[in-house]
Image (tube, rainbow, N blue to C red):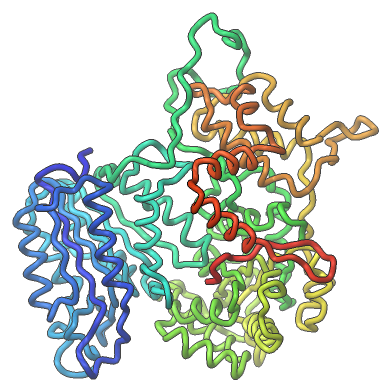
Length: 638
């Protein structure tokens, strides 16, 4: 598939940051910076010729917007990319419109199509484009409405996959708002894309395609508490090459026959052959938690995931939060993100229709009420500041807001009912939101006022409490470090969950750890050199149980991030398709892999960079004042 350097490529970047006086839309200064920096990234990093790029900031009206799209569509012969950043608006009949400077209020005259560009008009314009590949990226609220439109209508350009490749990438779901956080240089979605194109992905392949960019964003954005992007693809448009992956580290040259280690046996899946394809991506996440889109690489917690699902089922009739408690590094975040949520979406919660329930993850951060308000505002099309003020004044309003968010997210034809008394196993259960609050200990470590702590806990409780015999709108799951158990008991609303709704996350068994090491590699067609698994288990301190029966549990519970990082760096030192003991030794081992990488990066900095790193690293740790365990903290609170 071609890249962006071809002379037949045309890219149109459109951003609307300001609106005429009297508009109900807030200005978004980050849009202008986002468009400017993305344009520079596309030319400098992706090789896009400058004649093939046009930027349009604050189009005066929909006519100016449409003319720019028409011009780009006429000129493109190979690839056409139309990228919009700004407000997405819904007309009274629910049709998606892209805001311009003329956008005032689509519910009042003049007619919506005089104020903003209907997405339908954009599609009709693109239908006349002769380019082989057409790509549309929408970084705006309600962008998923465009995705829904792709599946209907015979005049839809993206349905014409027989004659062209097509790709639609949206920053949010049909009923979600996209994010441009105050004080941030870029919008959340495009900022993450710029970061990927500029810095790369250490777990990705040598080249970043459009599809690979989507997969990265679908992993990174939800992990940061941002909306999960959506995409619709037709043909081979996802293979469009964007740029090389700056963070990719190629493996050393393969060993030649006769070199030491050439006669070593390898560990292969039963169906594996030397001609099987190898995905050139890293199946290990290093120090990052595994996310919902990493479920295929997440192993070792099947039993614990099943326990968590069973506890959630109990909570359908016994409304209390489910508390997932474990030591730092025990894998709580990965269990919640890559275990629980994919399992619910796969229909493994024993409730009819639960696979369609909206699932959301937040972390308290430095302003937990703002994080919860941002989630509910995105889901209901409200203003986050207004929702935060509402929750601060009356946390009980979280129940109404959550119910509205569920109603907005659920398909209209599910046949669900909100009949009082609906219970697990009923033919038409009331839909819920699965609300996961990860890193709950941040509530106690980020100098959050006691009033905000209390309001946040009460809001979560309200969302998970039935009213007038109507089931609650949310199932609340809280992930928390075990050493903050005492602080959590200071909130009476959490005591019930801690006493009979707790799911402890303990150390993995030897068999589980072997799965963690072997099975992700097998997923992408990699082999493990004989003896590597035993070396890793030895360094983890894993042995056989003292009585010789069953798996031992003698390793530290907090070693999982270090193991995953050592495996990531071992992958970077792989020998073709083989993960080797020598490659593992080169990382510094489980105990030193992070330190080895950190020293290498630090040594490469100049004196000013080293001073900045010193300042930054000191800010990354919150030192406990009462003798408890230290915790991480954001260097720049979100």
